Amino acid sequence: MTGHSVTPDGAIVLEDGTVVAIDVTVIGNGEDAAEQIRRKEHGWGTLGALERARRERAEEWARCREEVKAGRMSQGQAQDARHDAALKVQGAWSGGCKRPVEMDGV
Figure 1 (cartoon, rainbow, N blue to C red):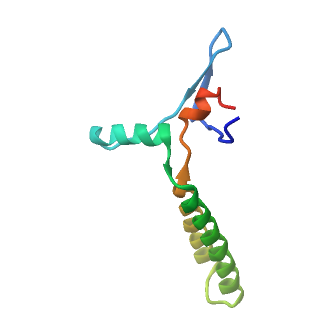
Figure 2 (tube, rainbow, N blue to C red):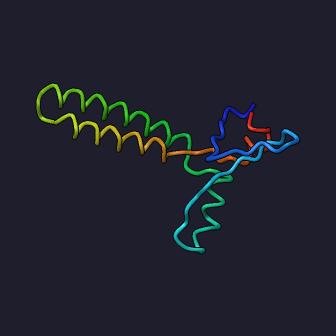
Figure 3 (cartoon, rainbow, N blue to C red):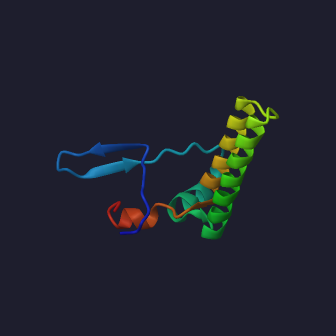
């Protein structure tokens, strides 16, 4: 097991039971295609960056709770701030899909 999950955008099961996964990425120009393929295959970021982003997310969510409770931040502002912090976690690291796919998605 790799410990990494792969979530495709779609999947097709062929008559023989073979599963074909489809990953869709929209790219603005051809020059970016090679880099996007590399990032999908091999990933990006570091585990250290992921840990930092998780700590910062927890701190931001706690700050938002306090600010809303004190009336200095609206629920909508807090939701936006929490969403931004969550996106930083999502963008901090990915192990890519090459290894999990080689392991049959285990």
